[in-house]
Image 1 (cartoon, one colour):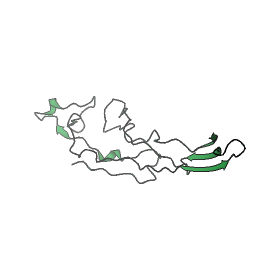
Image 2: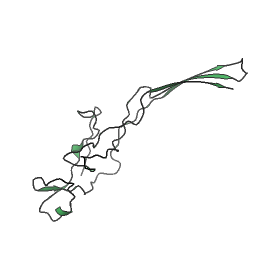
Image 3: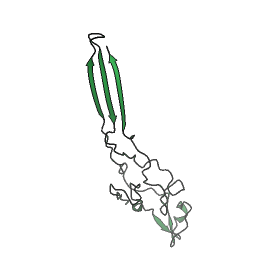
Length: 151
């Protein structure tokens, strides 16, 4: 059974990994085993008389790995001022809108990392970019000002 151990919110020593790749282990079979020729070793050499079966699917349930949470706060301040000189119903609307007010970095779930060990598939000896947080889900803080006349 494969189990996930998540790295604390401070992430790991390099500050980028979201999942602990040491929790993922591929099944191994003996070199003399009858099913050893059926194992896709992914270019690795047998270690201690064992070969890795990279083509064997795991037994972790679907959607059990979730990405980091999303925190976003937007703010709008609107001031309506009547313009009676233009008409009885004319208004000047001043707007201040701020998106991601607290400038919280929201990382994208690590699903777009395709360079696992440099071989295009996950490699146990060198996990490559597996679990790497390399993109953000939202933009940085943005502030916009606006004015419009409504009549």
